[in-house]
Image (cartoon, rainbow, N blue to C red; front, side):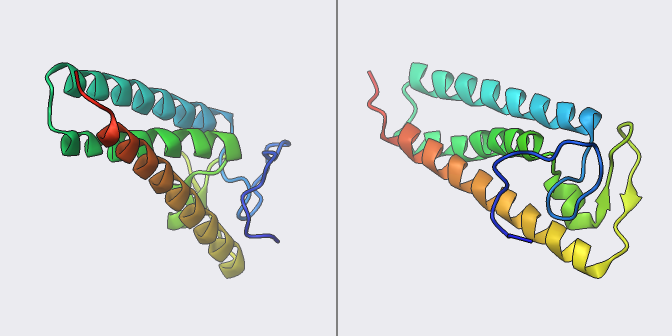
Length: 137
């Protein structure tokens, strides 16, 4: 199995190590987290620009934009990074999880979790740095 991010999400609603570990309910939660992070990023940036805060303070967007990216990436790939790190999956209702029994499957899930985490961090860093470089006034 390739360790690169899959360009087309898995369909079919079944657990596939390193590819799909959440179902529709969990996907909707991740998408909502992406929306919340995006709104938070816009509000924080607008507020900092309005009050004329120092440029370095806009680096806080690393957190909000990174969180938003994480939510959107997990929804798109049908893969929860937290579940992958913990060795569980959930294709059913929110609040229920099943253990991943096979060690190789857990390894694939941890690898995908790391990829999503690093991609989210990269997005957050880019947004934070660009925000810090924006001219004020």
